[in-house]
Image 1 (cartoon, rainbow, N blue to C red):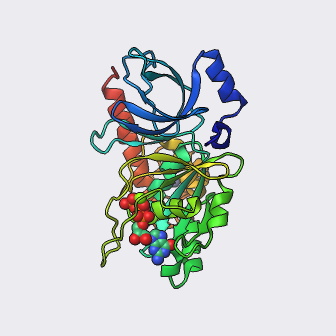
Image 2: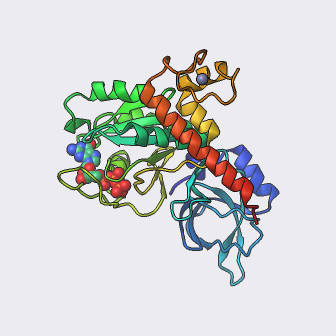
Image 3: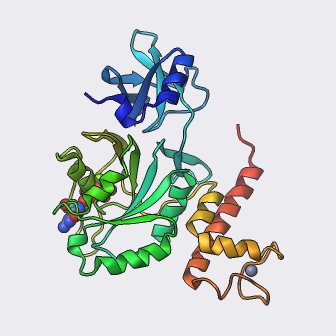
Length: 323
Ligand SMILES: Nc1nc2c(ncn2[C@@H]2O[C@H](COP(=O)(O)OP(=O)(O)OP(=O)(O)O)[C@@H](O)[C@H]2O)c(=O)[nH]1
Ligand SMILES: [Mg+2]
Ligand SMILES: [Zn+2]
């Protein structure tokens, strides 16, 4: 049986639940108005219809919640406890809305498959979203057994992801697993994000020591995945800590992610502040610009593109009042 403590139930969370007079639980998975929740007495299914007094916070995978007996004696989620971190993206179906992906991850790892080319724009977008969550950020370079020179790719990736820990793994032959497991020590939660087919679920299975998640071969030719994982799911590890496996995302859209942007492009952000003598400098090489010429031009281009995207979102939000 999984102990709640081993997946992060600390004194503060226990006390919050007690103060709300509910049973403490952690959301494992959400399916249309129903949540699978881990409690001290095992897994239960609870309803989470938002008619209840949860304010407007809908529970997501990784949330700590209180549970109360429901109307027909079936339990229901009462409150979502304050989140320490939250992975949010722009809702792909509805451009002007956020979508909450994972709550309370301590580390968010962006997984890249070494069987494919590095896509800087894709990787950096994931980093922006990962940093914005408030968690620590790591990059997991998976499938090292399919790459001739993993160290070389690791160096490239380090330049694209300042501040992130970079780990090389090969889950099938079982290499680099200890470094990943270390990120779940002290009852921490490690969330895996990344495109389809990069090996997220295979890594979960390797760390679990058993097949808990389905996996599927990538397309021959372009190594694209087949969107095998379809739900975000929290998976308690045998010892301590937990993982969150997520469905593959091709290009993640950041949402209200100015801090994430600054962190993901830390070297540009640092110079940006020095250039602020001119608030509307777009760093295109004007005399006196502190940024242009002093940073990687590709990174600068992608940074400005994302800044433009976020600025458009801000305008859009300001125009339409929230209801
Ligand atoms: N050679 C090798 N193949 C791997 C490794 N890790 C994963 N794969 C293979 O890559 C393919 C895709 O792996 P998955 O784990 O399903 O990928 P995923 O990231 O979970 O994909 P989605 O669920 O679609 O997002 C499978 O055929 C795996 O066997 C590895 O370390 N080495
Ligand atoms: Mg998967
Ligand atoms: Zn400038």
